[in-house]
Length: 366
Ligand code: MRU
Image 1 (cartoon, protein in one colour):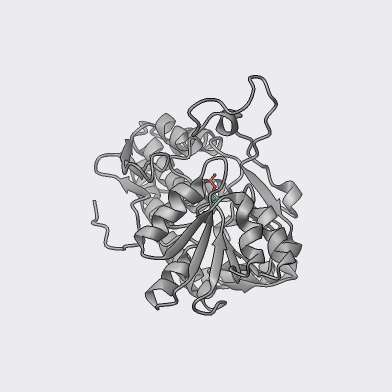
Image 2: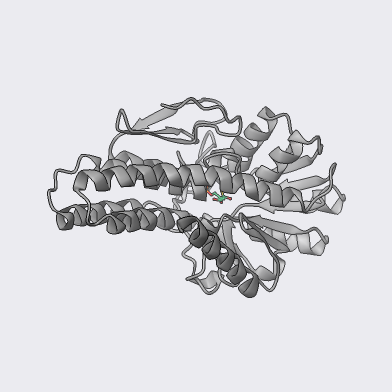
């Protein structure tokens, strides 16, 4: 395995081809325990995504690409059709692990495309191409996140207060993160940001992961409960909101961790800009609006029992536990991608971002 030299790479997801395993940092145990899981089966990879042991839209995509490769690596099929059929069964299975982050489907589609474009090759060569593609998806994510960080940093001044929700940091990606990337790059330049991290009920990605990451990097970070965001904004302590996303629709409506839309509405009230950090792999031009995005519903116990010593709601009470919400485009100041910054009207600016991406893809394939 290659040694990790990037300090913004936490070893979130590593494909160890030699040992035929996917190594992930178990995010459900952080910040108290640093434990890496060595996953060999499709079931354990599915479960790790579903249980949020690996989480965050880009990291889920990277894990799924490596996972599907491992799923077919030892395939004993001898014809292309048989191999493709096996691949598709495994693809469908991994795709059922979580519904909202489009990176999961994007990465699996990209792997399928890789199988198809190598149709004329031997099965062994198709497997080699899949291995390369899985590595490429991870390597690209690192570059994309760094570029988003550079664009994000260009939007803000030093010494400001920044509020973030959930965890869109190095733990949620291959490195740097998306929403935390400008903060890390700013830290290196002595920008001295003061970050407020929402704890992010019910799974506490903000409290457990964002504060862990930022504190470790020496960033000035203050943990707040979700219901305190309004108060810190009213105090004048926040000059920008940076968040990640799980799926951005073609009109700019954005699905991100539950609670994001409330933060964006508050920010509009207090005149604070809201920046969505979005790799193009998280933008779904096939979704016309946020209403087309499937929102994951999770177990009631995450609300009634998790983290508590004893149950904190009566048995049998109804619980609504959506993992994500949609922030309407009208509350978003800009969407920061690796191809530049999209501003309203997003229908037009996101289209332009994809035109830029296509012409860049075209020139590299020449
Ligand atoms: O349920 P999670 O923890 O996977 O949700 C993660 C988020 O909502 C992140 O903000 C999003 O995936 C962007 S990560 C760069």
